[in-house]
Each structure stands twice: as C-alpha cells, then as structure tokens.
Image 1 (cartoon, rainbow, N blue to C red):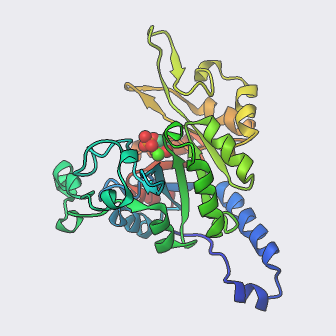
Image 2: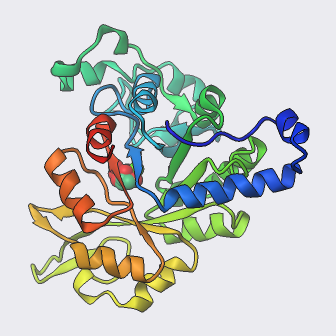
Image 3: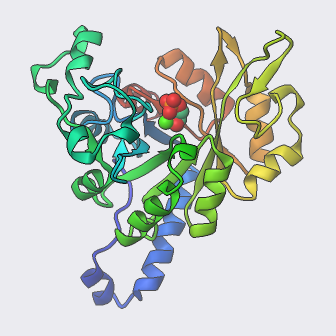
Amino acid sequence: MKHHSRLPLAAVLALGISPLAAQADALAQQLEDLQGFQIIAHRGASGYAPEHTWFAYDKARDMGADYLELDLHMSADNQLMVIHDDTLERTTNGEGNVKDHSLDALKALDAGSWFNQAHPEYANDDYAGAKLLTLDEVIGRYGDDVRYYIETKSPERYPELQRALVETLEAEGLVDAGAVVIQSFSQDSLEQIHALNADIPLVQLVWYSTAEDGDGLNEWTGVTPAPAEITDADFKAIADYAVGIGPNVVYDGQDVIDADFVAQAHANGLLVHPYTINEPDAMQRLLDWGVDGMFTNFPNRLNAIVE
Ligand code: G3P
Ligand code: CA
C-alpha cells in the first residue's frame, strides 16, 4: 500500500492537533486520494494465490495495491465472513450455503487447495489448508495500514449485514481513518449504509449484459438503464449517495461502456472504477478512457502501468 496512515493518538496530541480534526483530515485525505488512480486488489492478488486468504491479501499489499477488495457474507451465527460466493463448493472443500454454517464449521474448511488444482502455474504447497477469514481477522491483521473496498454480497440473505458491518468499522475507527469504501450491486444496501454513516464513501456496482431479446443491453440491478440511454439524471441519482460507479466493461466479447460513459459519469460527479481488468492491454485502454481506478486480480501488472 502506498498511502496514508492515521497518526497515533499520542502523536496527534503531541502535535497539538485535536483528534476530531485528525479524523476529518484522514477522511479528507481519503477523498483526495480517490481523485487519483486507485489499484483495487480484487479478492486480494487473487490471480496469484487463493482469493480472500492471507496469501492473496499479503501479496496485494506487497504489490502496491491501494485497496484490498473484500466480499462479505454471514455465517449461521452472524459472523461477517470474507468469501465471494453464496456457496462453498468453488473455493473450499465444503458444501452448501455459507449462511447455513457456523463460524467454527467454516473455519474448519480448506480454502486453498482448490487454487493449486485450478491454477497449477501459480500452485504453492503452502496454500493447501488456507482458512476462510472473518472481517474481524482481516482488520485485526492490517488495521488502518491498508484500505478496504468492501462489498455487501447478497444483502437480501443477510438483513443484519449492513448494521453489523458499520458497527464493526466504527468500533475499529476505520471510517474516521479514511480506510474504507463500501460497494454493492444493491442500491438498498448502500442506502442503508449511507443512513447509518454518511461519511463512508460508497460505490454503486452495475452489470450490463445483452437484453434477452438481443436488442441492446440491460442493467442487472435496475439502477441505471442501458449505457446508450443513460441520462445525466441517472448518474446524478447515484451521486446522491455514492462517490462512484463500478461497471463491468465487456459482456460476451462486446464492450458495454466506452469513454463517453466515463466522461458522463465524471461530469455528474461520479468516479468510475471498472471490474475486473487483468490484461495489460485492457488496463491501458481503460486508463486512456480516464477511469479512476480498476479492480484487478493482478495488482502488480496494473502498478507497472500506472507508475
Ligand atoms: O466488486 C467488483 C467486482 O468484484 C464485482 O464482481 O462478482 O467479482 O464480486 P464480483
Ligand atoms: Ca466483489
């Protein structure tokens, strides 16, 4: 990571800065940093190590990512778990829904061996037996030495998730430290978070795909119309609660957004953070469009281009 750190309280007091002023400065610094280009490590450096494990996060930090991207679900006993899928099969040796398993049961799973089979070119014996992580564990390891770009996944499954997340972040001082962005495909989830703490920068995710009748594009969540029909008012409605929009770029081999989309979002006060961009040519193309950051499984590739 190559940014900020909140000053320790003792240093703040020694410098004669009030703690409240220091908090405001940290948040202002985060918003200022967001105006620059942000490398968002998608599930950690998940191209090189099993996603959402210490291995992937440590690599992302060491590769100069600005944010660790985390996907959140909840265990049966209401612990915030960092995992992408609703279900366990793809990334662990477990079965069934995350939400139907206790924390203890989830911690007993192997969340690393699948990677060695799926990606032999990056396999490492150390990955076998890697554990699923709770949000508390991730925060406990990195504190505010890193920034977190946290996605509320399937919030309809977890009505308690928003409140639990905001309470955790506030208790750890991470909002005031300017260390968190929250993202979601769910507008409702983001609006709940905004109501709980309006200081948290939010990013509205969208997913454009071909309409079923083959005529143009649809947006999955209904937050915007197809890019060809987006008005300034559509972007402004998102800017009422969010600092940015996170679109996919390609669907079925075709571009779904373009440089005009980026310019129109900017003109209406929104940052643009596309996902998930792994190839250098695609990274450069989006940089040329003027995007403000990208989600990538290979943060070192993006860092090599932007530095
Ligand atoms: O959060 C941005 C991107 O990660 C959304 O897609 O499915 O990888 O969470 P997904
Ligand atoms: Ca995500």
